[in-house]
Image (cartoon, rainbow, N blue to C red; front, side):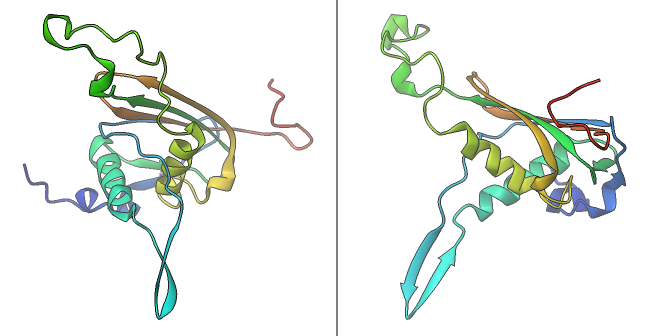
Length: 172
């Protein structure tokens, strides 16, 4: 299936509209969640830094564009970001043979593969400049990782209105 659209290239600028405080955006990205990797450096005459996750970032942005119908909101004020990382189980967690539908006793009850803040940072870095100006706008972050038969990332962005003199923890 070939789509002739700027959305398939990850160019979201033509589809963005300003979002108001209270606006809500939801997306379901059917890709394996990816944690942010540490920066890598090489030395071939000069010190050189490279991003080995650039392909994964482009794939994430293309999936975001493809999975979102209609116009995309662009949040300019404070936002709340809710993230759910659905992580597939390793083959080593499942029994074999006639018990292949059961988990081993040693299988962990929750994902232990990577830190949740690295998963969150990857998503925020991908959305930076795409759905909001900068990840400094995130005033509330709720992140959750769980096992799921279908690996994916669920994103919810809410525009937040904060009155002058009101702290981020207070709600009306």
